[in-house]
Image (cartoon, rainbow, N blue to C red; front, side):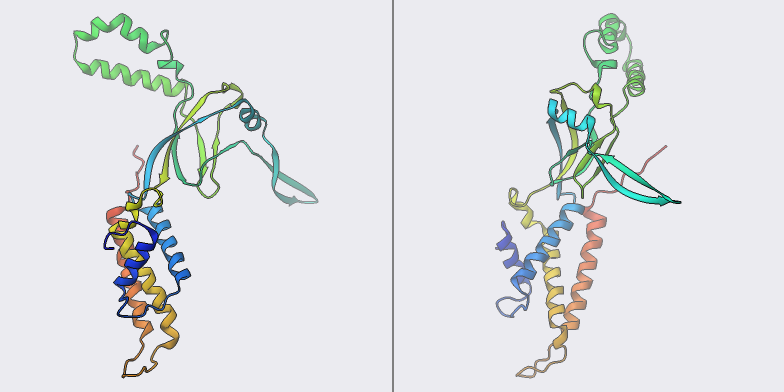
Length: 271
């Protein structure tokens, strides 16, 4: 049980850490389930082991392309200007992503013909005509030419601009949908949460175990605060406030540890 591999084992582990069966932990099972859900949500959003980078592919069908291209116009808001009312509309030109996707880094270029499309592109002709020439030189010149070609590609076929919010699960692609070929594929660079039901080692994560225990301990203290100072048989006095304060301190330390040791650092923009 020291290495839980399921939700029930994680719950039992946390209760044992709090004194069960020597002590009666005054926390309801429904409260424990909610707290474990909170811990898993925080783990998936912040811990680097709580997500995985995946490449999802999606096939654009003719029906889907037509719906996205034309869109269904809906009124999102209205405002009054003087004596007239102005309406703001939005079209449903988005792709619905699975709920497990919490971030989208980008979409691979849908048109790469500028540099690397077929045998008539610049890259192919470069190797066909000048391969013997580059064989006589070092790699520096070759790398500079490749960088120059990549700059040309980014100017003529820019990266796909996108908008995504994990609470909506909608991926907006700011492209000309009329130019998208039917039956074409989208390759999405995404971050997806690690499902503990499929990968049960999540329940045995050290930080998650300690954080879940601290949350249950905090709830235990909250449940016992109203009985603070009550004298029990045998001279024992309840002190729910102290239990609550200890748990709050433990949670603060664990969250700080998560941000400094287990969370991916933000990528600053340079230049």
